[in-house]
Image 1 (cartoon, rainbow, N blue to C red):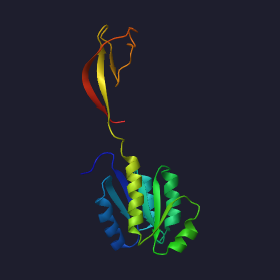
Image 2 (cartoon, rainbow, N blue to C red):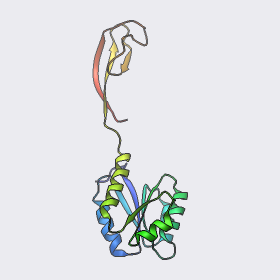
Image 3 (tube, rainbow, N blue to C red):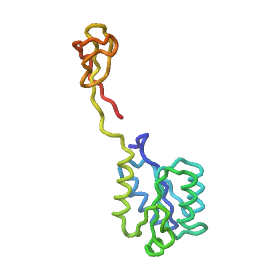
Image 4 (cartoon, helix red, strand yellow):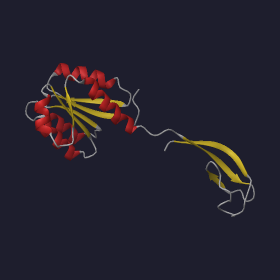
Length: 172
């Protein structure tokens, strides 16, 4: 089930079998709402110019526009996007992407990529709910939502016995 806050992921790789395998893996992860595939860097940049994305995973070696240049352009289009580059040639990837601030993975290090993604998705989740109480001043009837209630009523400024009306759960 896709939730409104789930991440939109761009996956760009010129290998169709790699795209298919990664898409299946990504779609099975909690917190990912959709995976949009691209066959090369030009298509990836075009997608990033059209859709709001949260995460991009790009292959280093792609036709028309390589992963490093596509990542640069996508990051300029969407400054808050998290970008990972992967390659079957990790030493070339490190040389070409060094100092750019993108996460770098060997294509066979699927566990590392999944752990990175899980961390990104965890940061997107809202914190645990906070339970507070809706209370009313027994003297003036003024209501506040807090737990514990203040010693003095903010309205009448008197020490009061608070009457609990209900428990409120907030997602903050």
